[in-house]
Length: 384
Image 1 (tube, rainbow, N blue to C red):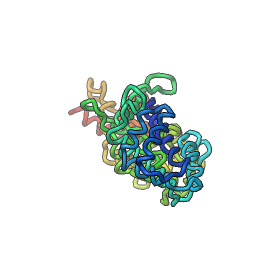
Image 2: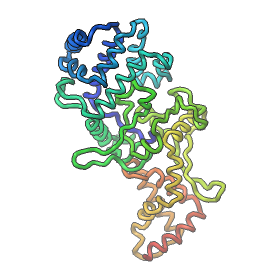
Image 3: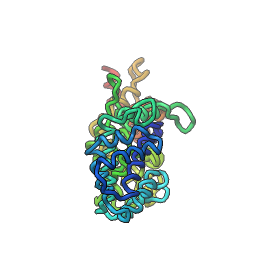
Image 4: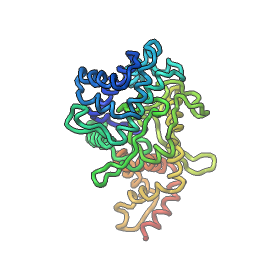
């Protein structure tokens, strides 16, 4: 959520979402209590009519994930299902929702039975299908199957093509949420969590949406974010967050252009990481509160500084070229810091930890007390 990231190119996932839309339309646009044996051929014909001859029998063969909740949905009167399909179609246009600030599905009561069944079907399409055995190529009418690994590969390919504001190649090699380690790859498998930015437990209709799936490190996904939802959670940290205008989003509204990561001496006299909005207005502040609530990057990055996990990176940059005469003074330190700042700035997003290391180096370049402390540290390091 901190780094800008490229949207993956994953046509198979788009096709799967079209199949899910057809699946919901079949259950929402009619009422039927026909026996399963009579409904099955009609279901298969429906998908064949829409150009997916293999999808009907494949979906029908998923009794827990699809068939059972679909039959329950079919049994409800059409009058109780009006508007749900339109809301689903509107809400999967996430760019449109971010423009107007709200989800259309929020107009429905929380206990709406038809909406709950539709959500169960879509959520099952993620947990019991995409994240399990995946979707066969013949079902999609494509050359390759779709599974969780395919989504992760599309994400990595997109980030390897990432460019900076000047058009230069700038592949993203860090976790987009916290600037830590990137996904690891071994035995041709990508080992990373796929985070649902809008939790699938609360937004099940977005469970398979590409813009709602972001690979995050396990710390971000499992330890800090989990199922947090800044828009709807009743937490004191996000009382000023009311709609989609008030939050960041990894693909549509990344935080990096709008927040500043700085180092300041606080009341205890020690340097601390401080994340601040670049513009001090209510909306920018709300977005920052959302970021800090969901990922706690300020506390985590401050911990890196307090525990001196930033020191080895900065020390390595400063030591470069200093071993020749062993002389270190504040002037030489300032020259080294200028070089370190330029180097770290050039490799933001390309090496883990550079965001906080850059903030620390910039602060140190203007803090006389910190420089005097570091001169002693560097003299010891040079003599080793």
